[in-house]
Length: 436
Ligand code: UGA
Image (cartoon, rainbow, N blue to C red):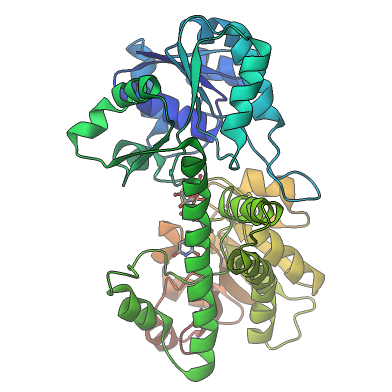
């Protein structure tokens, strides 16, 4: 089996490397010459994802994984071509921007040779697969092909494990010939009894959005419940456990925090809201989720300021963690992008440390002082704020932190410390959805 992966971004590179580990011959294609040369000549991985460098290196060395800017050449010899290009939110209206997907479809059509399965791996709105089909047919009326939707459910930071041991694989196509090719590609997963769900094209496209928006709603539910817990003196973790043990609810994705961020939930919730409005079947629950989450990120700055006494002009806040979650350098829609500027607008000097995200953060945030480590970050600060739950922040030397901070004030928006312990150590400690 040979596949071409069009788009060597996060999804394309991870999926390409993992398919090659399954024994498939993979050519990853990208227009970005520097990226392709870096990968091909120096094994440079353009993103931070644990384990990806070894996976790329070993499969490239075995000759199963290669990199090129020549799309036509890669497509010509492929049994299946995956479209894994970006689908950013279109400026202004929240719709997913599909110009890269359709552009790739045209180029693929021009290069196809023999029966080819064209797979959309990028998260694309319902109806995109049909449009890809139409574009290919228009460009190459003689082409022998099928279009398949095969959404990915990878989480940044655990993407390789999520690909190798998924909860399920979703494949949307009515064509039996295409299904056979997809079965062959995922052969390894049949051995570990992974559920492989075959659906119609549109259904598969919608499953991806339904999954992400459901998860975003679940997080938003527990975040609002956390606010209520603070008001009535309840503990949100006990509430989450108490409801999550009910198998119908489930325990995962009930961890409260400063609001969801990242490259997927914010974009996908917005895109599905638009799709639903356009279809005349609005998803009011998701519209509300989007609204609550947007407000929440801003409200977190108010929470910090209030806990610091209300007047913060001229004070310094040490911020630990800037990325939207640990084990990534991704800053897209990170809550820190709302919280840090709001603190600065209130007259605070923000000093920050993040294990992987500072270079990326510097492109989006201005006026931030960057520290070399957590302790330098908090030295002389008036408060310590934890925004991302990196493991190294879970194990801080608290006695040292206590002496370095000018005021023993800690606002932990990820609940990685225990309120009783923090008080016993002499801190004034605030977290989310627990006794303040
Ligand atoms: C998410 C989905 O989890 C993946 O299944 C999906 O494939 C991916 O989007 C995608 O569409 O590509 P990801 O954005 O990498 O993955 O990150 P998550 O681990 O899902 O976290 C998203 C956000 O939710 C983060 O800001 C995180 O801090 C927040 N979160 C998550 C919570 O606040 N509480 C939780 O209990 C879980």
